Length: 204
Image (tube, rainbow, N blue to C red):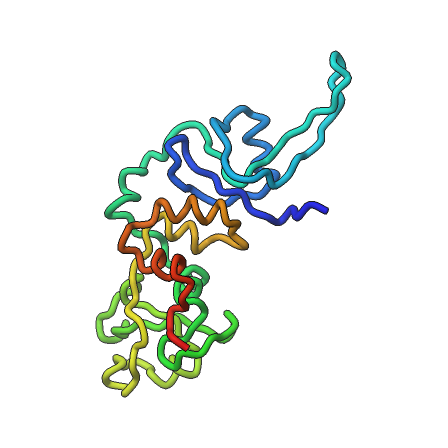
């Protein structure tokens, strides 16, 4: 039985990862002739109508990665100065759902966004100043810095690149999709080192 929830990685024609799309959007792009090439395993093979001339049924294979025509107008920015939008979902994924104060892992509903330098003290709501914190630790820290509250920050926050952000947005990423995304991560990427080593963010 097909797992129709499996996402397809869409890139531009240069191979720059753009977004995750569902199979319906992928099929629409294929049928409209907007796919330049496809990579990775075949996720689905959808069956269409019968061709009146040949008598054959139309088959549409959908690969794990599809490259669509054209290049992203801001592609040059994705390699150096791009800052992806900040969301709790991507933040929690960056920090592996770990509270970076107590070191425990929690479901999303028990997590919150903490500003290392509090907003009340002029801190900014940016990737480099936010970490995942359980609600208990966040309440204890309040509008103080970790030093002022006697709490230790267990990892340094960082801003993901565009390709890393695409990774953080994914669900159930397949091996060929992961390999493709990793090729677009910076060599000194914290996420790259973590994923390639298989080591968790915090040691057990």
